[in-house]
Image 1 (cartoon, one colour):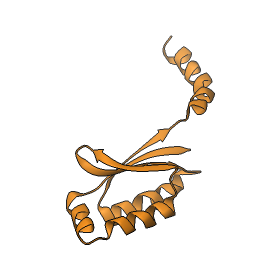
Image 2: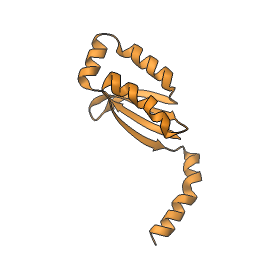
Image 3: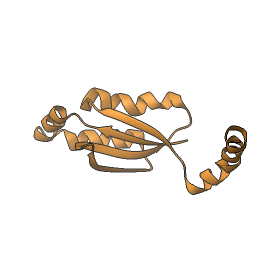
Length: 104
């Protein structure tokens, strides 16, 4: 299952990591460990943030994704399930069944 993970970094922790030069290496190590399908840095809610798409087999993998960001960046995480177009197509029968059952 793909997850869209948005990690908003704490301003003070982020400023300190950028100032002491550790932020770049920390992110390279982290992204090397997590191996997201894609990752980019942008603002989210006015804060520095990492946006990434990760593929997991189980919810048990979430701590390995989240904990380093909590511990090193005091990050606030938002996690959303994410579908590719063909996956949405495969889900349509379940969506249509829910519409028939709950919207009738």
